[in-house]
Length: 260
Image (cartoon, rainbow, N blue to C red):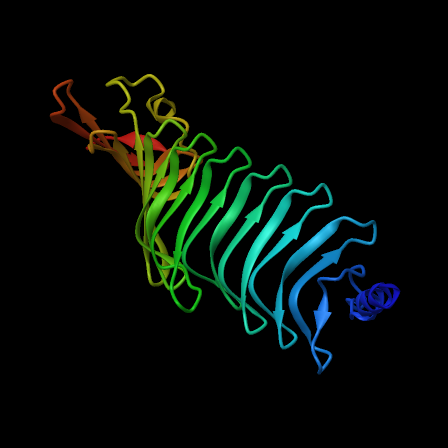
C-alpha cells in the first residue's frame, strides 16, 4: 500500500507543468515528447487570475481560445487554426456586453462584421470581401438603434448613394460617391415657408460649404448651387405653393437675390 501511494505521488510531481514566461504551474498544461505544448492549457496573470484558456497541438494554438479580464469576465473568444487566428471571433466590454464579432481571417475581418455600442445596440453592421475590404451594404447606427448611415461600398470605399439619418429615423442627406471619391450631396430638410423673412435660416441645421442640392422630405428641390456655411451664394431658390406646384425660381448671385 505504501509503495502504491509513493508511485502515484511520484507520477503527479513528475508531470510537466511549466508554461514558460507566462502563467502558473498546473496539471493541465502539458508538453509532448518534443517539448511542444499539447492539450488543454491555462495561462494566468501574475496576480493569479485566469488570463487565457485553450488547446495546443504540436505547439500551436487550435480551436477556440478564451481570454479574460482580471475581474473574471470574458474578454474575447478567438478561433485558431494551425496557430493562426482564423475563424469566428468575439470581443467583449468589461461588463460582459459584446463589443464586436465576426470572422477573423489571419490579419483581417471577412464576411459579416458587427460592432456594438456599450448599451448593446449595434454600432456598425459591415460586410467584408475575402481580401478584407468593405464591400456591399454597410450600415452605421445611432446609440438608440436608429440607422445613421446606409449605403453601398466597393473595395473599401463608398460607392454610389449613401443616406444619412438623424436619431429619429428622418432622412437628412443623400451623398453620392464614385470611384474617384465624393461626388455631390443632396440635403433633405423641411421646406421653408413661402416668405422673404430670412429664408436661408429656415432650412437649418444645414451649415454646408460647397455645391449642394437641398430637397424637402417629399423630394422637391428647394435650393441648388454653391453654399457657404449653409447660405446659398450662387444658384437657384425654388418657391412652391401649398399644393407643391412650382410658382417661382429665384436667382442668387454673391449671396443676394437678383431679378430673373
